[in-house]
Image 1 (cartoon, helix red, strand yellow):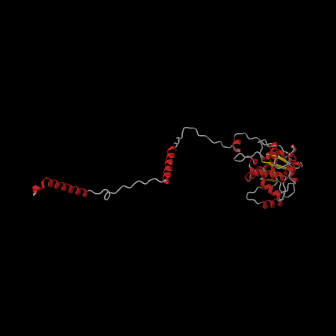
Image 2 (tube, rainbow, N blue to C red):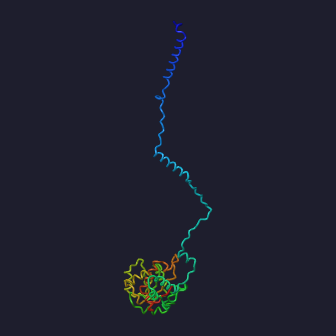
Length: 290
């Protein structure tokens, strides 16, 4: 019977075994669709995503174009540029020789101060005649020697003065310390005359008014601010006044004169307005620049 099957049976058997093996192998291999994970597909860019991407790309291009400039190292050997400092009164005066004041200096100061405060006609009235001035100090005199020169008949003038709340001689300076110094310098000139300090430091106006009313005062030495205040309060009467001596040439530590200090200058001009200029116009008062 085996012979009857012949070669076809063998072939058929062999083919069936081979096919079975192939099927087994096929079953052992993992299926690509089931076991192996599929790779995620790339999402297509929408219109918004394309716009954002384009903006980012543009910003990156701009950053690349902006190249930071390197700061050049400072040349330590290069000369430094100095800023020009404004010259002060001290700078100007320290390089110039001091010149004694003269009547023209005071007249120019008065004209300049009242140029925008008075009319042309009023300014003409403020001009002082040469007869209104005493001889000026040529920087060689002490206060006593200068006063002896400009007031040769002081002893007689002193005795004739009997009015209270008034003075015959008024010395105007810039500070309390300068006032004390000038009073000390008066020793050899004043004789029996009484001198009174007229400044604001540690002394009230009311106290000075009482001192002026208490007895006869011949000489008043003080600052323009306090003297003006006394005149305005009727504590000091200028009717008996004959001589006004300005401490014109003296300079402080910053080489400033009395009229170079703005606040003192204002007080000084106010004092001139309060009766001294009118006294000069009436030829009762004479001004001296010490």
